[in-house]
Image (cartoon, rainbow, N blue to C red; front, side, top):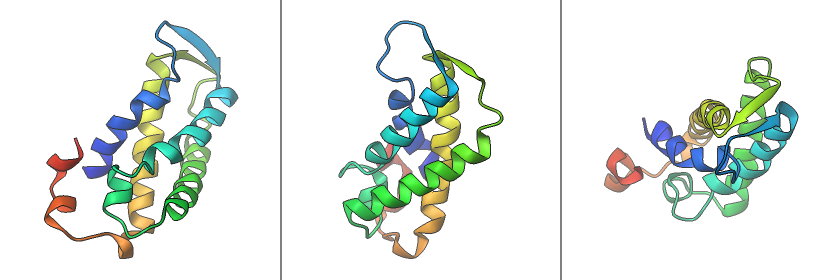
Length: 124
């Protein structure tokens, strides 16, 4: 649940910065996700930094790795052309949730067990 809420926050990066409907090819969208998702996950006030004992670089490295894994897992399902922002939001949510879950599993031994980190309302 925490990862789903954090992924919802990240949807804004998944649609690029286009306010109007636009199209982008799959490889361009994937390249953007691989570049944009790790810094968004690892902003200092985000769950993935606040609730794990990691440095900024450790967070970035881990998020980059799990993002690649999740994109590889879903790449055949992602359409060749994505209509933005609709498709970017949809697929960004799928990749973001996958990456958030994988990040949490990979760093479970570094997760901070606190009231703040255990209360999902703090991450909306």
